[in-house]
Every structure is written in structure tokens, then in C-alpha cells.
Image (cartoon, rainbow, N blue to C red; front, side, top):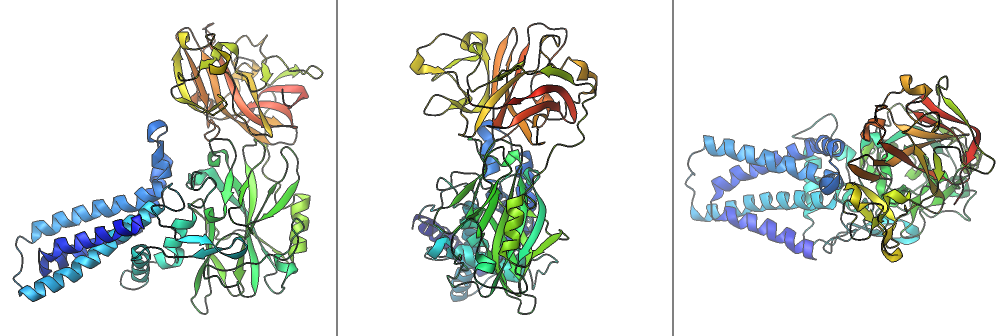
Length: 585
């Protein structure tokens, strides 16, 4: 209700402002608003992606969460300002019109300007990281069996009116090769759905395009089939009931699926990747009828247990289902499935608001659900990427003690004593209710760390998920004592612009999610599970001529796996002879 009143007040206020200025001025302003709106939608994706790719961290990190909202409203405001300046420069005076026409015409033109402005405002806000029900506005709700249903609880649906208006223009007066109407047939619904994430909208709904990739596609029963042969599976009983946004069952459905690899940049601050129903969607089109539909996923297949090639298929068949990754591997492949009416073909796939290129992707055609299930269970569908072409020629080989830890590697969530902090004095490093570090980066004076404090106030542990732990690998020091030191045999081949990783015996890669660093002047802690290190040189530089530097890389690794290599890029720094078994300590 509150957002309805704000939208009405904005539209009415703009309408009134132009009533008193007269029809001619209101008409010119309406034309400027329409053109500015066209510019906004034309540059929307480009602007949003530019913000996502350049979003700063820290205090201004909110820019990435608001990228799709800012990317819409900022071009609108800027282009409207430029257009108004041009018009005001060219048209120096108002035209004389009879009072009745002035008021009526001014009111109509002002109302159009107001509705468009309010519609762009509501859509922009809806695409930001705000609660699912924001100021009483929720364009999508749960219907039966966990299906989404489109609703409209704005008293005046300015968001849908504006989206429909520009969708129509994109195929008519302002026709373009890739019209808005084709790629966003339900724009207002999409804006509301992507906010229906875990935590009531708290989880991230926007990621950088390079944080995920499309690795495959498949269909199930595209030619024929019904019931369990289409909507059944090995992991769940019965036939799933699927419905469209109108609440009606999807007619004669087949399944379209996409295998998406979620990179470390898609992780939440607590370390897992969480994919909610509204955070991926598929736009399809029937070329014969011209009908376009937006479908939301019916299920996701993903790794079922950390460190093992065991996979499951999980349905979105209850309200508020959210699928989370397991373990700490750099990538989490997931197969996202949609129920699509036969006769419809995919047009666009969106995952966390990123439009992935589905053109030319190789597609597997499964005759029925059983054939797909077999590929899920055997790992053929979701094998995931593995480390390849590792150069071990200069690696330091270290023996792993029986049931022990090799030199330079410490397993466990506790900080080394010299890095301990006190509650209330962590500044840029955030802690959870258990006084565990769960995110952030901060440099400290040496006098601020390692101090003896009351146990209840001590901050001396990292937060992890139930199926991971921390491996702390020392990267500095004498390589004869510390085999993982960057000054060892592999130093000549190390490219510090590449990311440091641990690799297990199955080839899975685990990125560094931070570091601990001290020298004679300072101590620094970085623990960013949602933003792994993309390069070794993101950390402080190490010099072989200094004896006061200590640097420990932090890796969050799946329990139960065996770590075989420490690498920077493709260069292996250390190989563990007798892999390090990761277990809770």
C-alpha cells in the first residue's frame, strides 16, 4: 500500500505540475519523458553490467546490489535532463491555448509523464536488493505446489503499464532488432520474482556476468510424453504439478534444462551459493502464435554431498524452497529445469539477472525423465570442471605425516594467536553472534591484535559451513622450512596475476578466500568467502629480502576431500606426497 501511495503521489504531482504550466509545455515534457524512457530501457542492461563490473567494495558495495535498479533509473534521469535542456534552449516561450484546452491537455500530458516516471521508479526499485514485499508491493506470490503466480497489488499498476508501453514501442514505432517485448515480456513480474530469495530478499540477486557460465543444455520429452515420463524423477515421489504465472497448468509441457556453473563470485557472505526460484527464469516464444511466456524453474540438480560425485534433483514444489551448494569448491555446477508448453522455444535465459547466451549451445535430447535421471546419477550431466594442465615441474614435494599436517599448512578455523581480536574493535571485519569472523577486510596496528582478552569477548575463529573447514597455508618464509613459500623452486614460474588455489585428488579447485598478514608495522585480515582472491597480487607483496613478513592464505575446503596441490594459476607451488585429508579439527 505504501509504494502504491508513493507511485500515485509521484504521478499525480507531476500531472498537477504540468496542468498549471499549460498544454504546450506539458506536451513537450511528455515527449521528453517518452524519449528518456526509451533511452533508459535501451541502455538498461549495458549500464547495469557496467556498474556490476566496476562496483567498489566496502561501504559502497551496495552499488552492485542496486545495479539493475540504478542502471534503469540513472539513464532515465540523465537523458531527461539533457532533453529538457535542449528543448528549453530551442523553445523560449509558451504557446497560447484556450484555458479549457490548457488544463485538459496539460493534465493528460502531465498524467502520461507522471505514470511513466512513476513506473520507471517502481521497476527500478523492484530490481534492487530489497525485501520480497517492499512497502506493501509484491508482484509475485506463491500459488499451489510452489508455483509462482503473478499478482498486482498496486492501486495503479504503473510498473506494468510502463513496461507494456515500452514493450509495444520496441516492436512498432521504436522497433529494434532485439525488442524489449521479446526479452522482457513480464518485466514487472521478473522484478518482483528475483527478490523472493532466501532470507526474505536478503541474499544477492545480482552477480557479475563473469561469475557464472553456461556449460550445457538439454530437453526432456520434447517430442512426446506425459506424467512421470516428463515431470517425474528418481529423487522425489509422484508427478510434479506445474503451473504458469496465470495459475493454470502448463499445457502439454516438456522440460528445458541448462547446466550453469556458479563461480565463487556468486557465493553469499556465509560461503554458500543459494539459488531461489525467482532468481532464474526462461523466456520462450511460440513462433506460430507469437505468444511469449516467462517460466520459472521447477527443479535444480546439484551436488548432494561435499567432496563426492553424488548428485540429486530438488524440486521447487513447496513455498520458499531455496537450493544451496555444498562444500567449498570454486565452482558449483547446477542444472536448472523449466516446464515449457510444446510449441514454445527458448529465447532468453536469466540467472541472477544476467542474461546468458543460449544461441548455439549444444543440447542433449532425453526421450524421458528416466534417461535424464541416469545422467544425473552417474555424473554425466553435472561433472563440473576440473583443474587441467597443471605444471608440477618446479613444485616443492612435501611428505604428509600419517594423520598429520605437512609443514606450512594448518587445518582448522582458529586464528593464529597473534591475530586474535576483541569484540567491538574489529572495525571492517564483521562477526556473527558466536564471535566468529564471517567477512570483511581490515588492517590493524600491531597493538590491536593478539592481545589477551576475556574469553567471552575474544574473536579468534572463522565462521564456516557445516561441510567445510579452513586450511591455512603459509606463503612466506624460508622455503627449506616452509615448502609452500612463494620463494621456493617454483618462484621463477609464478604469475602473481593468477589466483592461488588448492586442488584435490579429483581435480576440484578451492580458491583462496582471504589471508592473514603481518610485518613490522601492521597486521591485516581478509576473510571474504563471497569474493575469493582473483590474483595473488591482491594481497600484500612479499619480498625475499625481508624477514618481518608473514602471509597465510585462507582456503575454505570441503570436508572429506584430499588436497594434492597448492597452485598459483597453473603453476604448482607445492605437491603433497600423501594427500592431505581434510577433516574437522
